[in-house]
Amino acid sequence: MNRFIGFNPGIASGSTGHHYAGRNNAFWRLLHDSSLAPGLSAQVDFLLPNHGIGLTNVAARTTRSADELTSAEYREGARTLRAKLSAFRPLIACYTGKGAYRWASNVRIDHIQYGLQAHQAVEAIHDYVVPSPSGRSTIAYAVKLGYYMSLKLYADLLQK
Image (cartoon, rainbow, N blue to C red; front, side, top):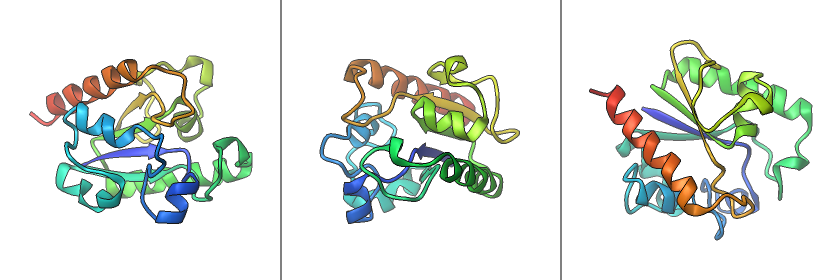
């Protein structure tokens, strides 16, 4: 199983109980268009394990923006996240944004590129960073999709 890791739940996700539920969030469209999990939406996020995918966040508190979280919340969330990853042992931990990976791995943000990471937050788990699917992200959809498609290829390669 592979695990997608976001910052924290946004307002729509917090109120619906479904991951990446914001109407401007491209996560589900990216999963579909990259063939990682075609045809799913936030309302049926419980079906993701059928596609070998799990979801979690670095921090649990719902906010309008990840900037509202405190450093203490991120540090505590990162400890909890590493424990979850150690327990569940996904093949790939895919962080939806450089900031989410930064907190989990303690790698400086200016040393993080999108794609496969040299440093592992948890030993023997491949860390991969894709651009944030948030509607607030200024990265073009086609660029985001390219990273999700590369993730799909990498995951397929590892599973052979």
